[in-house]
Image (tube, rainbow, N blue to C red; front, side, top):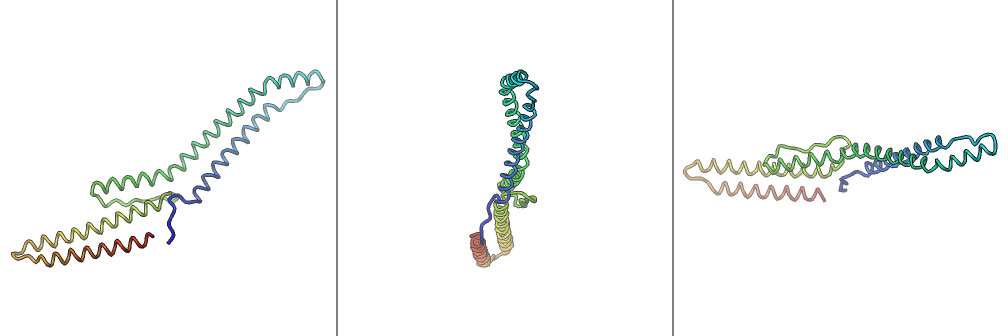
Length: 186
């Protein structure tokens, strides 16, 4: 059985493509801004051309600074937007994972971790849900053993061998479940 990866390769590839597209879009937009700033005619005569080139030489550094500043702002904004959407696909399962662990620490095994379509870290969530199911099974077995012991203690002559046999059976069942779950994970 193959192991699931916490973050799917397709998700990672899509994220990288979105990020690259953001960079390309920022570069194209700032290049267009720079082009339109610098798109000036040289003039009709030699003197007008020299004046235009002289003015252009003086203004090119400011145009470049403006162009690169616009590119930086666009890339930062697009990166923030992409990271906000992508982080929810990872942070959501982590948050729900944390809630489940908190409920386990409070002896509440009713909580199952759910994932949404497109969430990442599903293998971790699946493993935690398996752990919670195992804990529920153990709790149920111990509860049944406790009830049997209480029932036997109500009698004048309790049959402790019956309780011991039930405890051995529970131990064997839990060991078999542990081996079966451990073998399926590998």
